[in-house]
Length: 254
Picture 1 (cartoon, rainbow, N blue to C red):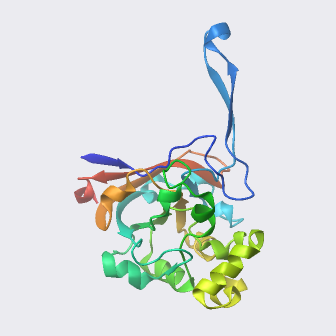
Picture 2 (picture 1 turned 45 degrees about the vertical axis):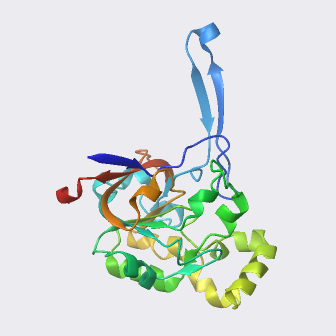
Picture 3 (picture 1 turned 180 degrees about the vertical axis):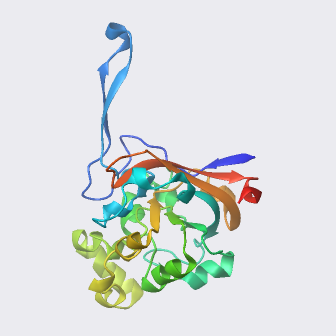
């Protein structure tokens, strides 16, 4: 069995989702005096690789501790869309199924290529990573429900298109740029009833997602593989920092 770590390194330099609190770490004990190192950590749940839970966008949703591991581990596919969608692009279910076979109940990992713009990469570009990555529209969300996707993972700042999030209001200059690139008003592409659809429409269906994947994702593109997401066993947690691992050679177990 070979393991592939799909987790982004977590650091105080890791940018949180815009408007969220960053990770802060400080020592309150040191080996030189107390003969032990101890740290205090303050963070929001939306920094680095993290699992967005149902309760993040749905009041009646389960907390992270209530999601059984059986729902977070299983067979899945990693699909490379980096050749099909670029800046502000919109991906569809057809693009997915042209490249991989998605079975009922699969875990679905989407490689946009935007993890190459993450803070720890040579091509680091926080604006591109958070604000210009591709994303889906309502057709894709409906397809995920039909396929009963177990959970979704993306290698960029959000599972939603950035212009279907608060970024549209935070960066009106980029919203205008996006409209010019797509040749259509954003209000038509992403109407109010589809606001942040990957969160609002899928969480009540039990389809949650991981954002900010990275690590060794480039090594397992367009193939079936066993995948696991391991968040904290977090009572009342709306989301959680997590570790995501692909297990080559375990497909037969599922």
